[in-house]
Image (cartoon, rainbow, N blue to C red):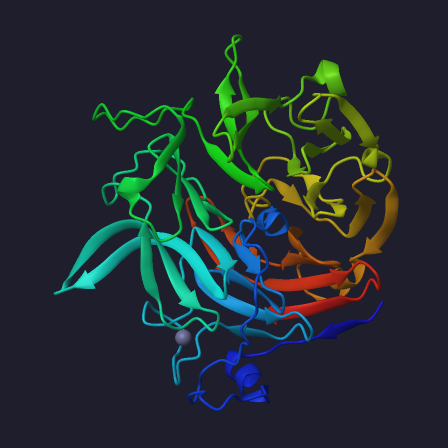
Length: 430
Ligand SMILES: [Zn+2]
């Protein structure tokens, strides 16, 4: 397998771009506008298990993602990457850079990019808190504009764990102090419709409630899904899936993390599954150490689709509408020295590809990356785009010891491998 290295600095990529429109300003990125279909929630882009690359979205021609607070663009056809700035002579270092998103969600919709972040704006020498807001920018990163508040009072959301808001067919879904809301994109938050949940009351003690409900939002076709951790009668928590029918406005509980007695034991006991994906009225889920499963959310019938533990005992996984991809990384034994990427997993050098019918399709080797890149300690799966699987190769090293001090050398390489050809492409390096 041949690995082609494509290491592009931002301005090099911009300079190499040959198609220049008449009205293009000097330094402006040349990213052709593309329609983004129906504006459906991009399920495949919200599967990342990498804490280093959590936010990504795609258009027909490209992929947008954030690493270390800055946004980048990959042209799908060439795999060329560039920082999403386009400002002449910008060092891409601070808040004045177009590419500094610092986002907590990222979507492409109707030829624009949208992202949310906590807005502290410098005004007359002091920072004013506008709270969590949605911004809109053009596909080249320019023309930033705040378009929607996500907090009724700036900084007023008292949830411990912020929920990543989603956009589906022009409607935003977000939580505020424990309640899930829906609001047409760009609308006044006072018009937001309450869907579900109980308001968290702040008694002033600011004590973190370990039983507080946390949300993961999802959408497929006419249904909005949300996974929350619910307290069970025996005192344990279980991830529980609810469905909100956008036509009837009904909310129903449709699934819950299975017990070991239903599906056998797996790596982590019973609270959450390792990875899940809802599509076409079914939830597909992977249990590291315990199988690949599907539950029909109407009939509640559960079937085992495959036994990936025959290929790899443990692993992390991402889904697309066609595939399940499992990486054979392994749970780490506890210990600060080795636990430098905070995923709880280490290593990983082979991908196992399954169809969503459970059929094993192929094995892809990533072993060459360990030979070409010094000090790789973990591969972190990020997302599927068509038949390309994107992942982060983490060669971050940390030396020193607790109490004395650490030296931290960050080395992250974004790569993609094509399911058809098995070819690995290195996309970005720093
Ligand atoms: Zn910049």
